[in-house]
Amino acid sequence: MLDDHEMVRRGLRQLLESGGVNVVGESGSAREAVRLIPALRPELVILDDDLPDGTGAAVCRAIAVTDPSIRSVLLAGAAEEAVLIDAIVAGAWGCLSKLDDGGEQLRLIRRACQVVCVSEWAIF
Image 1: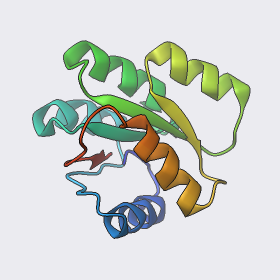
Image 2 (image 1 turned 60 degrees about the horizontal axis):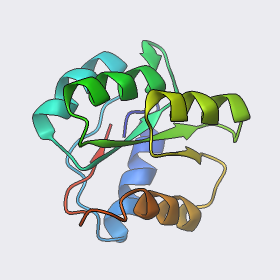
Image 3 (image 1 turned 120 degrees about the horizontal axis):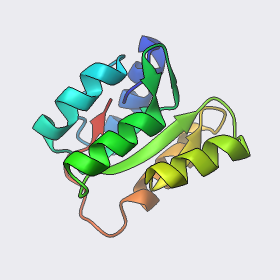
């Protein structure tokens, strides 16, 4: 997961791993995520939308150029229409709200990867 808050990354990692998901990476920096994601080649990345050094939507666009097979889901602090539109325009497969409970977040993440057999996910 790409999120500048370690507690958010830790909580989402625990949620995903308890759901049988293999987490292959995480970062608190947009710049670092753009560099690491193509090297790790995960099937899905979860990107915080609001970061000190960029946005999840910008990282999503960079990933789509580098490797369009990697799916992205944006994670927003609130379910705002503008964030959802920006996520779609950036090529994200969906948008999660930090306000959703863990079960709903896991359901939406799994839905984003229905087409592929998920074995490795990255949390950036």
